[in-house]
View: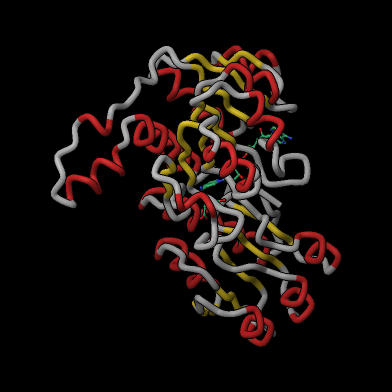
Length: 308
Ligand code: NAD
Ligand code: MLT
């Protein structure tokens, strides 16, 4: 059987696949190239770089499984795949600690202006007054989406002695209590929080969950984080709220379009950005590569898909 890996995958995962299948690694393919290339393959393994469109799925004549080495399957046309009987599966656990740690790193970097101060000193400036920061202790963090990553963020923020509010329609009071999170609506979080971070999937219910209405309700100086998916926060609305001075800072790892070279968010000094690095640690990449390789082996051997 043949497996096509169209985004970079750690060797640990590739080795597992190679024990069972013929594996081709071809990264950076355009949609047209992938439409040609996909023919004959039994499995396609991707990260976030490959957009698996309806055209690619229609062109696939032997495909049984699309395996996403990571969490979000928003880069796959899941409906088109399902209609063709192709399993879409992911590796949801391997990168959750890395994504949570990145969120905390971004929150601290934003609070203490670390990227701006770093750039300033390297430009041979010594401006200690310019980079006055704030403590997070005693501040309220609103967490929207309390699944794997949101919960890990909450636990870590609790260790930083922050107060926690959260919104997730599928979390129980008991679980929220265990995490030390006061459950609230999105608008209540908007009104009360000093920091707001989103950790939901990008689906129709969560697209633009923070929009002009919510920014209007927020405290002046609120700080916003998105290390989940571009589009959960309306980027234009966020830009307007930064422009008006309502939002005091933002830390953004993910964008509606990636790379986000046209995004208005890149123009503000008080917005810190990273190029979708939430899962970019050695540990996470080994974990997700192994998990997705095992999933592909299972499915192509007639076994179950754990995360379909
Ligand atoms: P998860 O499925 O474990 O958690 C998502 C949570 O969102 C669930 O608890 C769910 O109940 C909740 N949710 C669903 N609909 C909601 C709604 N309408 N309002 C509020 N909450 C809602 O997923 P996860 O592993 O925690 O991942 C969270 C996000 O982070 C995903 O978008 C994922 O793609 C992204 N992610 C990004 C990176 C990165 O590199 N930046 C890395 C890993 C994951
Ligand atoms: C994910 O959803 O797992 C992340 O976007 C990480 C990635 O694969 O880049």
